[in-house]
Length: 195
Image (cartoon, rainbow, N blue to C red; front, side, top):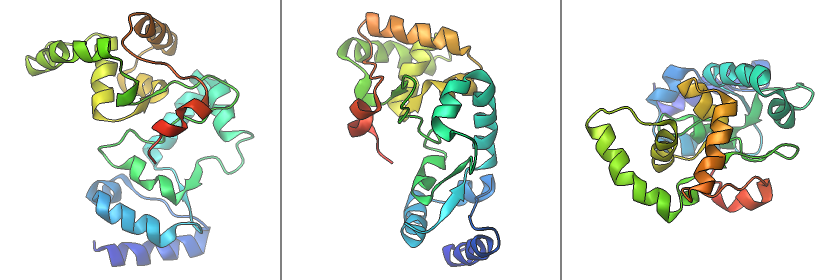
């Protein structure tokens, strides 16, 4: 489907329901350049409902960490409606909705820049393990993920079926070992957020 046809289809959706939503197939067919064009088209006047896969994640989050869910979505009114500006986050090379602006709970959002020199020193061994198809430890897996794209621990736990309590303790251990920096305050994270 051409971008022009997709825009026409989504304009009809916006007119009928007040927002737009993209299917997994539509998202998988889009390039970053096309998504940037779509964002420019609707910037400032269109809300987007999260993709169904991301809604499933947030329903999991509501059960696993209700304080974080409440920090993000409050009373639940208009839950899962976000700015069209977030559309690029749902491409396959990204890690979905960035949970990085929590006000009432600690943030656990990390980027490549949060990896300290001791963590970078671990990367050759991690790459070697992945090349030889040797399973990675959970902390190694997080470092590997951070080399690909920024991620928060909730998406990480959901993707790898890892217990949240275990991953939070692992973050403390990674900080202690000097592998990463953990910035819990959203104001400290602002310069690392690329949306």
